[in-house]
Image 1 (spheres, rainbow, N blue to C red):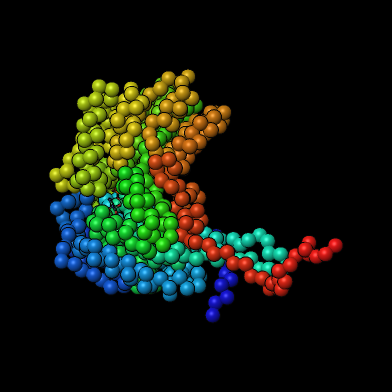
Image 2: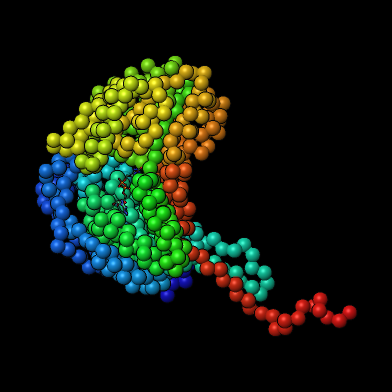
Amino acid sequence: MSNGIFSVPVPVNEPVLSYAPGSPEKAELKKALAEMNGSVMDIPMFIGGKEVRSGTKIPLSPPHDHQHVIGHYYRGDASHVKSAIDAALQAKAAWAALPWEQRASVFLKAADLISGPYRARLNAATMLAQSKNVYQAEIDAVAELADFWRFNVYYMEGIYRQQPDVSPKTIWNRLEYRPLEGFIFALSPFNFTSICANLSSAPAMMGNTVVWKPADSQIYSAQVLMEVFREAGVPDGVINLVFVDGPEAGEVIFNHPDFAGLHFTGSTGVFQHLWKTIGNNISRYRSYPRVVGETGGKDFIFAHPSADVEALAVAISRGSFEYQGQKCSASSRAYIPRSIYVDVMSRVLADLKTMKMGSPLDFRNFINAVIDERSFDKIASYIDRAKASPDSEVIAGGNYDKSKGYFIEPTIVKTNNPKSLTMCEEIFGPVLTVYEYEDDKWEETIGLLDQTSPYALTGALFAQDRYAIHRGSQLLEHSAGNFYINDKPTGAVVGQQPFGGARGSGTNDKAGSYLNLIRWASPRTIKENFVPAKDYRYPFLAEE
Ligand code: NAD
């Protein structure tokens, strides 16, 4: 029997390995890549612990080599979503009743599995399925995910420790952090393996059971996550994985009376549509569902005339083009003062010339493919429109080719219209738009930046003048949920920079922090009276 009194030591961030030539991790990863790239993985859905194969088989190919098949998955329908909900509801009571430290152990084990025996396999899956170079895979699928699990356990214990401040004599006041009543729907995007795992596992850690639908292009690495969940000991039915068309899944989920919460990461348009659907169905549910969504961005770098030019140029190159600009945090608009513009941009253009593009299997490639044809076509059309626009000029890149893989050169558009299309809309690709402003208009330009897009996810301010740092930070107070001073706006680390944006960018519940976990609990207040009153009459009623 557990007495439930344990404390969790402060975790340490998982170290990022170098994969330098000759390193053991590189040899192991190369082996996993060769094996996985040379075979075809058969990927079932997982419902109630059972592998489920439907009649419809869909091939999966790496974005950098779209004619090469590395796996196939089985597409489900509404009946699979119903079964997954039933399995989640059936598994709920036992999982919720398990002492928290038992649930914690499952995810601590999962963290040790991916930083140990599963490291190469999970990285290889992410490199192949999502076209990430080794560094991008390592910081996502291994480092960030291990951090999510270890830090969330720490935060969970911290939440449970939060109890009412006062229990007067004869009374004991307590808070019990129950999981939500019903099931949680985790709906995940293509771009981060870690986010996909966290969307399903964070509610599960807090005692909830989950139906998880990943993006089609992430199914291949989702399969490896499922292997890890199973080996770590996530019981049958706690996390159910279905491969169903989003709207078809939504039709079943959002009409179910036991729908208790949505844990979403993806685009703003989809999230707003889901929120509306939930709102329209609100009277069908047993509880008010928790709606947590991290969505799109139009992330900025703003340079003050006092900015360090070298640091700024590196932040632009890395922040805008790593993982082909497909990070929700990637900078896609930059504001640079005239006095340093030429110096900064000549450095960035020189950097771009040295960036090699191609398959992640060749470790020398910094840039890989964008996720799929739909994305490729969308990004290419933004580039074409910028080329045709009288107020914009493509000053770097601008070429694209989808003959073998979905490759788009890192592209920089210079505009003299701070509200041009590519300054305002999320493109989600390797396209940065820069706007050169007059040095003495820097405060005015910050005002313009703040009013240019509906998003407020990440942003960076570069300045060395302390007054400018202070003033700029004030003016940009609501422009970003993750704000950086003299650093690139990407690369948030769990336990260090809790991540999430406001305005159109999401509910800002900060993935990888107690703020997120608390959304998956429904506290019950318990007052226990050891010596209850035995007479209804108060003293004031007595005769004079
Ligand atoms: P997406 O919105 O296209 O898809 C997200 C998920 O929703 C997928 O599983 C998809 O199949 C599903 N879906 C789509 N339409 C649906 C519908 N009508 N009903 C039910 N499900 C539906 O997003 P994506 O292209 O996979 O990911 C890129 C987006 O995610 C970008 O906008 C990016 O900014 C955002 N993102 C945000 C963060 C963040 O933390 N703010 C992190 C990563 C990605």
